[in-house]
Image (cartoon, rainbow, N blue to C red; front, side, top):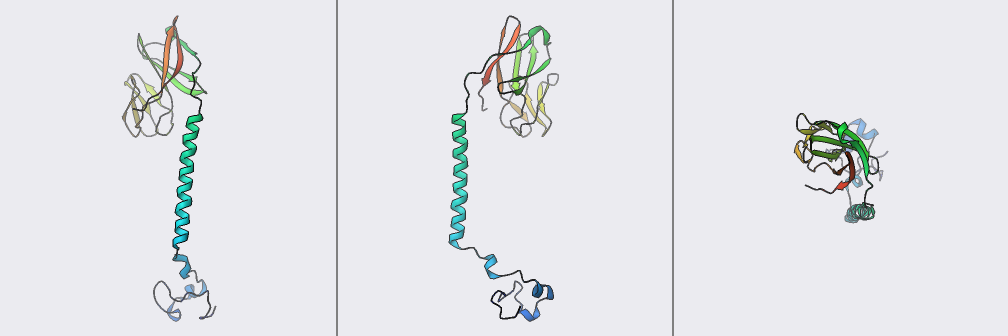
Length: 180
């Protein structure tokens, strides 16, 4: 390259003339004035395209939630009441094969939740002896009686499965919509 080459930058980042530059900069001239310049049009195009992609993504999420089928869920037999002792836990799958847990808190008190933590979908572990449900991924804790978060990063409660007991059998009958 010659000193008058149009691809050769006229000034260097350190401000020294070409003759005073180190040999590596002469051999590998990577600094050109156009590298640092972004015009208003290019910047505006970038902003419009990025904003458009964000809006399209939000519309997709909203549309998918409207189309999603949250109709009545089928009843599913989970366990015989006599097979679940007080403090006992039964794992089961319900509605679209979602992993769930059934916990018997007292003779007449049963609760069931989805087994995925609402924070990052890690499997939660019921601990009736501690009175909580534990998420080992980020040390999250939920109240065992209501499924509300009490410690750790989770901010939303566990999804609750509605239950019904008939003729000594526990049935899952649907999901309870909960946000707080």
